[in-house]
Length: 200
Image 1 (cartoon, one colour):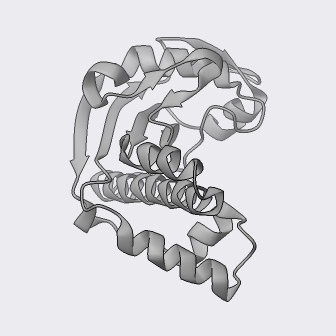
Image 2: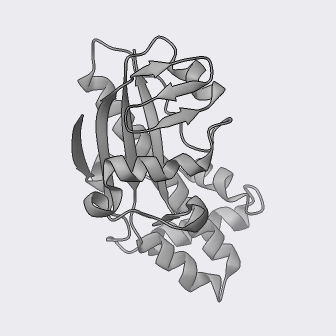
Image 3: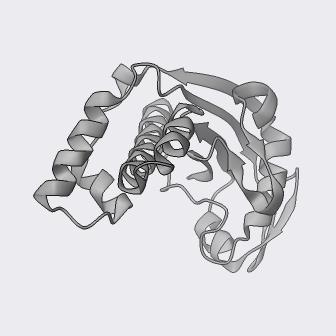
């Protein structure tokens, strides 16, 4: 297994996409009032709100059958994952987080303005998705002679969220990027993602 920790400078990511944030928020659609509130939220973001971190490891696949995948560190039962990994011998496993800053903003505004809190939550979702996209793009450049499939996360299809415990154990998420796993598979910071990327 090879592993590393990647720290992303926020300037390396595209700026927040208002259209995506509104889609994640479902906060009254794209009315002018909602757009104006979103722009005020973006303008008020403290410069140190986000701390972009990814930990990752390249792992060999031991075996993939019709519904069982042996990853070496764990055996997962999932037909959807097995189909996704068909024809692959290696994977990238990763965890990404944008830190606790956005969680604090959501909590603070949740008491006084639920609409503002909802938009801050959506900003956090858009930012972690942008981080994952940036990571996958970086890895695609690194593995230029291979094809990387779109990421596949616990909770997709029939792959249960309970496999998060295996992901956290093998990556050492808490020690490396301060990402912890609570009861029911909930991650803290909340704006975080774990995923597999198949290498063909």
